[in-house]
Length: 174
Image (cartoon, rainbow, N blue to C red; front, side, top):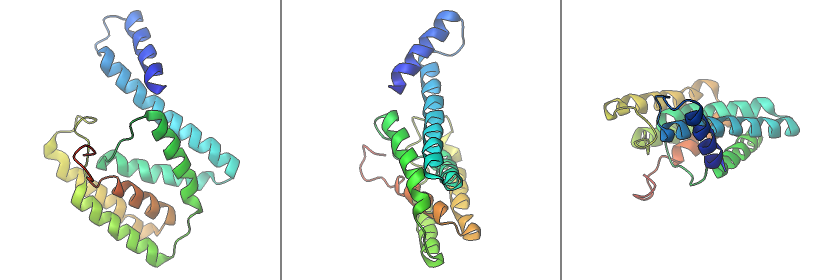
């Protein structure tokens, strides 16, 4: 669905301005990324309004999104599935309340996973040269480590979830 919409939009842009410097494929990819992001945030926030926990959902979206942007990870086959799963997770996670000890353990496990596997699966979706991957690993580790100060159940859960998406369970997934 998102791919179809982004394809039609890219065709419209190319028809309106054939000299546009971006190729059709680049436009389509960029538009699909924007639609996915905006759609995910809108869906998550609308659901959060209905469930009356907007702040927790926003914390989940920001925690997950910040870490994912530097660490990469597993990609679903469908943008729509990704949008729905992310919106549902961002709304479910604020209901999980953890003790300080569990938050600490989850944060430390997330740091270890990021140190071992970040960045993961970003070669095809990023233009960042491989020489900067150690820096991405450091940034991911620092983002997760910030929860040692915040002691947030939401952030700990999001970080562990995202860090688990870094694990290369198979060559296909990596």
